[in-house]
Length: 53
Image 1 (cartoon, rainbow, N blue to C red):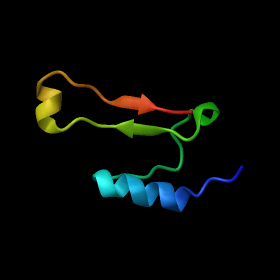
Image 2 (image 1 turned 60 degrees about the vertical axis):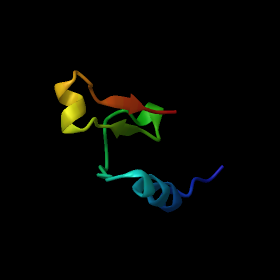
Image 3 (image 1 turned 90 degrees about the horizontal axis):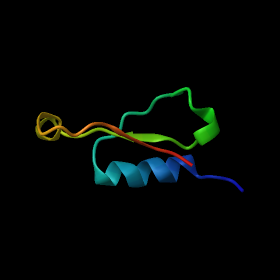
Image 4 (image 1 turned 180 degrees about the horizontal axis):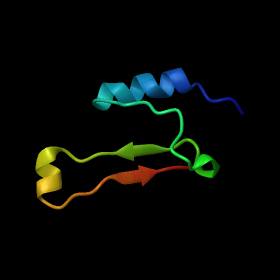
């Protein structure tokens, strides 16, 4: 199965800002994204969420 990474990235960018990294050191869980809370969310106690597989 092939994955169209460019299409995935384009769709993610429609939802908000995206920062791309070459490696997050969790290759066994690819594709991995990290959702960062806003400044207001962090103030309220929210933390980053890692999503993979």
